[in-house]
Image (cartoon, rainbow, N blue to C red):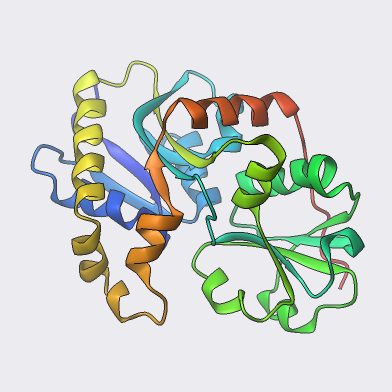
Length: 256
């Protein structure tokens, strides 16, 4: 039995309400492990965490695991921090360099390339963010997380993947969901649910605690307008469609 649950969460701005709730809700005592999405998933897969916020694309491959809580990292409109950026229109893109911190966004880009943009680019891992300043004709970059704020004005074309998904399917999207191992005590899951509710209801306090009110972007607008935390039936339907598509993108090493 898990007496002090170990919870893995993502160390991005969009999760700070969750983190705030886990740290401050009165009925949850937990060990919190913070990492980028790919490392967060690894913490869960290796058993370092009992509950985790994991990339939605990973869920079908997780054994003895169930999706829990009514919360996710999702979007019903523009998500803003999951984009493909390029100096060329997407139809002219020949290579897409993929942010290594994400799994869901990589596979979502693959889905959109095939079903929305009708392109077949070469896929490469983005191993050096300095490459963003030296894009060649036909290059595009999948970027996720807070770094997008620094780059969104520096490319001629920025394609918001939540917008593009909605244009292709008519559905919102969930980029990450909460999971637990089957057999995790109900009390731990219920306490997490309560903590997440508390955190979302105290988004402004979470911003102040993290110092995000001093950033050049409007963190409160981003968290309350771009991010939608409720994992509702439409987002369930979106993920079933996404999973059933079976898109698999495997980037090659950056050719330079």
